[in-house]
Every structure is written in structure tokens, then in C-alpha cells.
Image 1 (cartoon, rainbow, N blue to C red):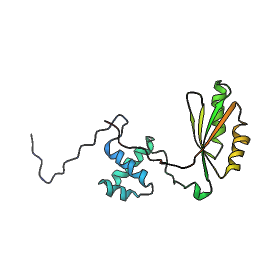
Image 2: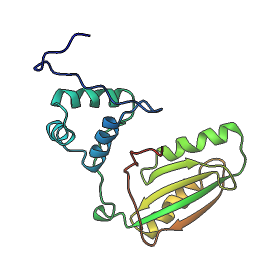
Image 3: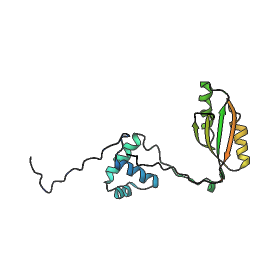
Length: 175
């Protein structure tokens, strides 16, 4: 077996990819982006001990593959006058396919609805909602949600205090 010349660089083996197609560097890069989405590529490269072009290539691949959906700013809701955070449970009158498909389309048009989940069990949809005040909440519930076709009942829970709110996903998987 021929010996390499001492000055010949050895090429590092790429990290093993897990079942999601991500390797350790991908996960560390995603974690760093979650901590600060405005971090420059140069800073990410320095922090992760990778070249700038290497980071750019990984970012493009993670964007193309859908691991990074978009870049955004997190706004403090109270700083912009949205003082009430609520969870709204919606029960449909019937579960015909047309009704089940129609409700999410209606909800997508409501800027107060931050998140909407289709659930199993007694509640059909769970909405995370922000509004300025109780009057705003009342208008949203009575003028928009309860008038949506197929809606039978709506129950609202007003959040008294946010104990934990994050958008950061855990990047390490259990082994």
C-alpha cells in the first residue's frame, strides 16, 4: 500500500447521515440558525469550523430539501398590541369531507390565527389565536369563526401566562 506524502492533506470522511438524511454538522448548523437567524455565513463557518463555501452549500441543500422552510423574525406580540393569547377548540357539526376541507381554508384567511391543528377525538380543530383585547376576541369568535360553515361549537381558553414559548426544535435525536 503506497504511503501518502506527509504534506498531502487527508480528506475528512463525511459524517454519517441519520434516518432523516441529516448529519451532525447539519444538525449543529440548524441549531445555530434557530439561535440567531441573522447570523452571517462567515460567522456560522467560523463557529462550526467549516469553510464559508461549505456552509453556503449546506444551507442551499437544507433549503432545497425543505429542512429550512424560510427565514423570519420573531415579533413580541405584546409589543405590537396583541395582549391576549388564546386557544380555541372548534367542533364541527358533521364530518363530511367537504366540511372538513372547507374549515381550514376559512382559517387560513384569518391573520389572528397563528396555528391550526386538525385533531382526533372530541375536538376537531385547535387554534392558537392572538388578539388585541376581549372585544377583538369576541368579534373573531362571533363574526368569523362561529359563522364558518359546518362549525357547531367553539370553546375558548385565554392564556393567563406563557410559561414556555419557543420555535426552536430539538436538534439531537435519541439514540
